[in-house]
Length: 505
Image 1 (cartoon, rainbow, N blue to C red):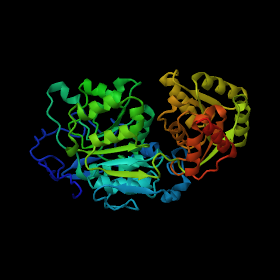
Image 2 (image 1 turned 90 degrees about the vertical axis):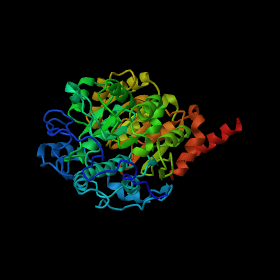
Image 3 (image 1 turned 30 degrees about the vertical axis):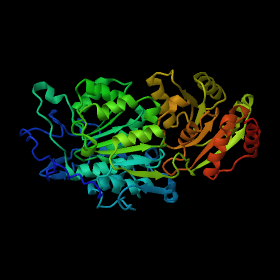
Image 4 (image 1 turned 180 degrees about the vertical axis):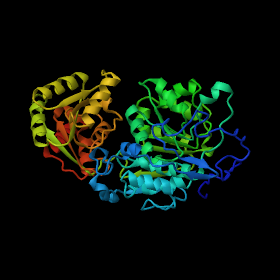
């Protein structure tokens, strides 16, 4: 059938962005602050002072301090959003399938995007849409549901934020906030957009992007995650929360405390859905989407992003999405050609000395080293420090605070070498990693793909080195297939070990 239009259905939008028949708000009620005193950008870290008045979006005044914080000074290297290699993105094949797929766009223009959003995109230094954005923007602007298979680093955050915010800026606040009596009125937020992601690091990264793109608008972004003080997160929400980025566990907690209603959700995004399921979040996700007051599939728009598309993700898509368009960016589960992958044959006892050689040769840039065990993470980083390399480590036994500090040291390049266990590195967003070393290869090829996906992001080029010996022969076939698919050279020893192994069945 024709693309679903959001104005269809019993409750049509009025130009004010309110539902027909919705109770009118009391005069003097600040619908963006949800009854919170004052509002304004001083109250909220990200949103500017924009307003929605008389059916129009009125952006707030520029704020040089916030601008420097969000977008960096001109040519500030720490705010490098775009790599040099974005043009190379055009070669990435994108396939869209489904009923009446909207035409892809090639530029950030109005239409379909809102002018204020385009200003912010420009300030953030994004020049042209990445392949995933070329398709996702018109699909989402057309009111359609989306299931996208895309790697981290393909620009997918913009792929969902741009069209969602564009519609928010054009349509204004949605629905109405029920009158809550007395003190309770300040306590509950009614966001219109919800973005779920697996880890603190990923939700924080999405929130940082959202702050850039909501700058000077009426939309207030908030972020909540476990493992941090809930008090400050509650205060943040009380000041108004239009777009909420959350980890599933913490969101369930806030719903149980009566601090967030999902009754006004128009946009639901599940980012890195496969990782959320890997981490055991399916019960919480189902509770949020199906067990609370969230509007049904036909009354909201749902977007799912996942690096892979296994059976359990297909089931989730079937349950949460409606007549969706399926988008695959690059070959699903494939690795980027921006990454040069090398595999070296190294016996366990020689790994340290080979690692030192590599660090001496590829000195510049951030290097991320994956090891199998927590103990190895500590001993290897101590060894490197003793050899005069500024290294730090993260693993599951570290406190949240220690992990944050280690990550900070790494991101800021005070310690440009990070030794990590795979679990600790799940979902971390570390921009601009130059080199990933698989000191200990994982037993599952998907984990390998995910690890090396830390480099070669956002169009930058990266290097990946894996240490391989006969102890890793379980992944040899998959590794060969993967290297061939990404046009990388396959060393002879891999082929011969594969032949040996196949002799044993």
